[in-house]
Amino acid sequence: LAKTTQPISMDSYEGQEVNITCSHNNIATNDYITWYQQFPSQGPRFIIQGYKTKVTNEVASLFIPADRKSSTLSLPRVSLSDTAVYYCLVGDSGNTPLVFGKGTRLSVIA
Amino acid sequence: NAGVTQTPKFRVLKTGQSMTLLCAQDMNHEYMYWYRQDPGMGLRLIHYSVGEGTTAKGEVPDGYNVSRLKKQNFLLGLESAAPSQTSVYFCASRATGTGSYEQYFGPGTRLTVT
Image (tube, rainbow over all chains, first blue to last red; front, side):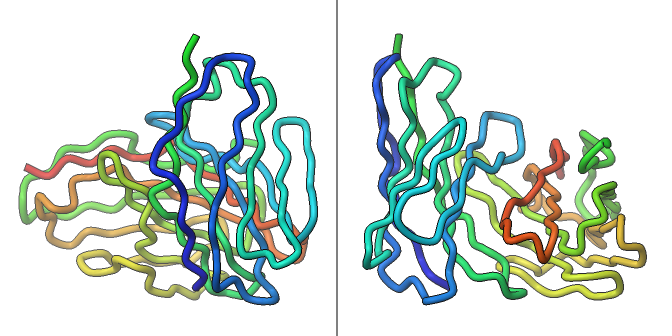
């Protein structure tokens, strides 16, 4: 299973763009990259997934360089409600489940 | 659709007691998972299932058993509860063959073992 490394915590002011980078140096050819968001006392919620280059949806963008050894989750114009823990997961489509690390605790300040 | 539901939401057990947590999903998902989350920590996989009648061990399976007799249900059992099993337990499910790795999580069960 590919291991991931993320910053433990980050702070940001409201309205700023936040970029959280995840390192996954031993990512395999078939592995996808997935990000989840978790609020206190709730289960994680899927944000975005990608394989290479850039993926964008209504809440975030995911940037993946050509070597795929890292990925960056970009949250545009964060608000207080984006305060949460963000998890980066790497894995393939097989039966082996993905592993949640400790995540990045994002605090958005007014 | 109710999505993923978990029963019960809260439970207090004495050391040595047993209990079963129920996870149900109405999305016809093949894969189901049980995680535990300790305070300030990430999720750790206990057991998972890739289809009806199948189960497999995750990262921290000791002290737990599971069963997947019906596709929509995944049961997590504690035969003899210990204080170290005090945690929040999350169930999740995922579809296959869609190209998406999205896991849908339930609201969690907060278990305290005294």
